[in-house]
Length: 235
Ligand SMILES: C[S@@+](CC[C@H](N)C(=O)[O-])C[C@H]1O[C@@H](n2cnc3c(N)ncnc32)[C@H](O)[C@@H]1O
Image (tube, rainbow, N blue to C red; front, side, top):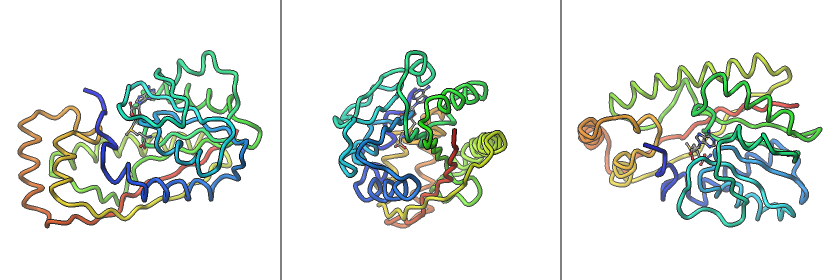
């Protein structure tokens, strides 16, 4: 099963979230109209599509995703392929290579390969910006089994961040946080749609049991902070 419902009508696809995320990116990089952007695991590409409009980019940003998502952003060039494969024929240089909540999909040996390929494709002042879920004080609403799986995934994401920080001198770590307010009804629907990768492998019966837990545990409106760790690497 693949990740088709990640940002399908959730806070992750809201203009509020996209604006706030892009404002964060703008603080990290000195963009101009000629900036070249690559987004690895871009999903529908709404984030870089919106960034492109905001910056009035001359060159359309490129997004890579192995999944063919419906309702994709038309303001980007979408490459429907594996990220490592993309670099085989790539001769372009980028000022920003973004990996937002996508690095944990790669095996460890592929992460090493991917980051080294990314570094080769950076412009002189270019930056690779990697976002993963905040591993320590994560607030994602979860039922017990989901929490267990999330924690396991966090351990791996923590290892990835540690490895990348250790192997990239001069890296910078930041945090991004977005206040989410969502109805329990909508969040239950997201769980039903297995919006996050930790839910993909669960049995249907485990999802149903989990939803019952969420129904009991939360009030009509759910409030939490969607927190991300941001790791910035240079060439
Ligand atoms: C959790 S989603 C994040 C989407 C988007 N970056 C965002 O934050 O809204 C992860 C995305 O990575 C994509 N992905 C996973 N493995 C990939 C690979 N090997 N090459 C390219 N994309 C990949 C998935 O299809 C999925 O769309």
